[in-house]
Structure formats: C-alpha cells, structure tokens
Length: 501
Image 1: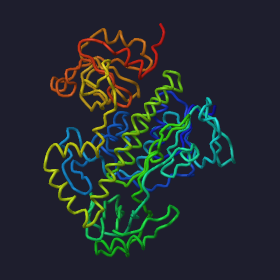
Image 2: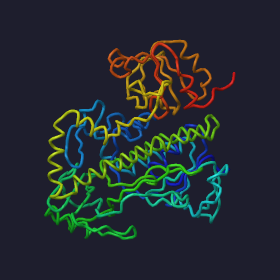
Image 3: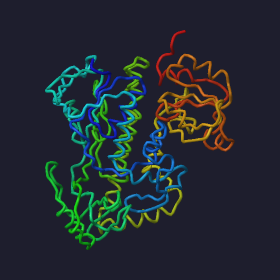
Image 4: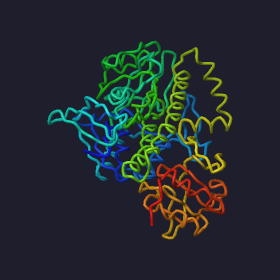
C-alpha cells in the first residue's frame, strides 16, 4: 500500500480530513490536480460550529487572531436579519477569513503532522475491486507521468464535479441550476459594505472589504439564465449586472478574478460505497448561504477522520464507517433544505415579498430565532445515539459538548482543550473510581479526565450527568449519573474492543 488512505482534493475538506487522519495515526496521501493553490478567496468565513471544530484542535491561533477571531452576532436567514445570540453560544460565524487563508492554515496543520500532499496529481481512473476487495487502486497523472496508487480507502473531497464520485458510480440526484450569479474580487473601487446582502428590485448584491483596495462582491441579478460549467465570465459582465441592480457604475475598476455559481442543489445518494467515501462538495452542492458549504465539509471531515483512522489502524471494526453516512447524510439533506429555502426568500423577487414579511414577523419570537440560528450555525445537530433502553434519554446524547471551563488536577482547562489530541474523552465530574476502572481497556483511544465544572454548568449543561463520554469530534455518546451502566457498551461501540490485559 502507498498509504492507508488516499484523499483526493486539497481544499478545506480534504486538508481537514488529512489532519484528522494523521491525528489518529493513519498514513495519508492527498492528491490535488492543481500544481499550486489558486489563492482565490471563494469563501469568506465559516459557521459557529466549524469555528468550534477548529477550536477543538487548537487551530484558531493559526488564523492570526486567536480567540479574538471576529464573529458577528447578527446573521440572517434568506436576507432577514436577526440576532443569533438568542441561542446560547450561537453567532453567525467568523467573517473576513478568505478561503485561501483557511486552506493555508489547514495545509500547514496537516503537513506538520506528516500528511503527504502531492500537487499536480490528477486522478484518471478507479480500478475494479473497491466494492469487495481489501484495497482501492487509482491511476493518476503526476508530474512524473502516469502511475498507480493503492490504499485501504479512498475519499473524494474533489468538489461538486467530483471525479471520484463519478468513477465510483455514486448517484448525485437533485435539482438543476435555474439561474447564474457572479462573484469577484474587485479593485480600485470605493464600495459601501453590504455584509449580509441587499435585496433590490432587480436582484441582490453583497459587498465586503477583503484587504486594502480589494472588495469581494456577489451579484445575483433576477432573470439571469443558468450557465454551462464550461462557460467563462468577464468583469464587464459583472459590472453590467451590478449597475443593473444598484445603479452604481463600477466599470472603472478591475478584478483580481471573477467567476459564477448557480442554485443547483444535489446530494450524493451514498457517502460510502465499498472503500470509496465522499465528503464536502463532492457529497453535496447548494446555493451559498453564510459559509455553510465550507463549514459542512469541515464537519464531514471531523466526523469521518477519527473513524477512518481507527479502522485502518485496527482499533475499530469496519462497521464504524457505516455511521458516517448514517450521521452526515441527514445533515447534508437538511443543509440543502435550508439553503433552498433561503434562496426562495432572498432571490425570489417581488413574488417572495409576502414570505419575507412573514419570516420577518416570525423572527420577533425567541423560539423562532433560536431555531433558525441553530439551523444556520449548525449548533442544532444531534446524531441518533441511544442509551441501553433504546432511547436518547439524556439531553446531551448525540449533541456536541460546547466549550466549558473545567478545573482538573493540573489546573484550569476547558472541554475543547481536552480534544486537541483528537482522542475520545471520558469526563469524570464526580471523581468516581469506577469510571476509570470501566474504561481501562480503552486507554489507547480514550483519555479519562477527572475534573470539576461550575454548579451552573453542572445543572444547565450537564443536566445532572456525573460522567460523559465524548467522541473526538465533540459529540456526547454516553452519560452516567451515579454509576457506569452502559459505559462499556458505548466504549466498544465507538472505540472498538478493549485491549487485552
């Protein structure tokens, strides 16, 4: 084998996955057909949950701003603005972070941990045997000619037009594009910020400063026909569309780059087929809305990485990988639902005005603000995790454990810092020796941490739980109150059989 896992695509999803795999001890090769990163800043931030994922791995300081990373408490749903902090811990996400910076941060993190990133390598073919064999084999065009590479698993993180998905024969059902929209990084212009977008009679526009003299603009004219993926767009077209919507003439400026996107909405029928898996845009495409595409891809990688590493290193059985599709496919389906709904509200023109008014009225209610904030921030995600009785009885089960301060034997810490190593964490809040004893067979995969939380967090967050088992991706899969019933079952389910001795 050339590696345990071959990842195709060195965008945010593929690079995040490579780092996660290396944390779990898997050998990984990342193949990307581009000789160098584009440097284009398509995404300009990420959601609150993606920010938490980065924080769980200690990555926020690599963005240059540490925990003071700029976040916006005010966000929108389909252009209807409201305060996301109605939901505890929520915000609209980190803004002003170009995708090129996110990729550079994740590439540095992955290579620091030993990931082998090979640029100028384009996958050409996927050979038979990935469905029922013990490995997967691909042919790639490399700077040194055509060669074959073998690995235990192959993960396609190669975007909406994924070669891996097509070669694996995975269906990509959904809806065709109905309109074209433009984006560009423009220069030599003095534009007023329109961070959350502005809906006008002839369309919608957004504008945000990127750096001195450069603005990102998005232009969504009503009635613009869908375009072929092979089409090109010019700055002159973008400037004309901008003037048509805003009345402002920007033709005297220039552009570092221009592109277009659409409202096509599709989701892979399977996130796993044999030894081929999909993540990020290779698994789901949709109308951009608040950085959710990049953020969902990062979360796909965080969900898959520790599981795949555990399987290829022999710590867990291959059935653990079935939980990847089971957990992430519904998340992707919900993502497509919310972005389609936002598109109807934001880009529906005069016909959508009654809907915009109703949503505006509804955001006057706390319960609605909390619900919509949870959808867009991704903080509402709850995987199906049941207790021994077959019910998700405790409110934490399946949910992420937020960032909470703790006091441990070595002083002050927090729940995210405990996850920096990418291992499971069994948090003992009561100093119960039975917890450590029950988990002794999993010390190779799970850290048992005895710590105390504030009385407020013990009641409001932990809801009476005296011990919680947290997966490497931050989701709770077991809670205990005054005992260890079910703990061994949960450990075996998520972290494989206990070590002997």
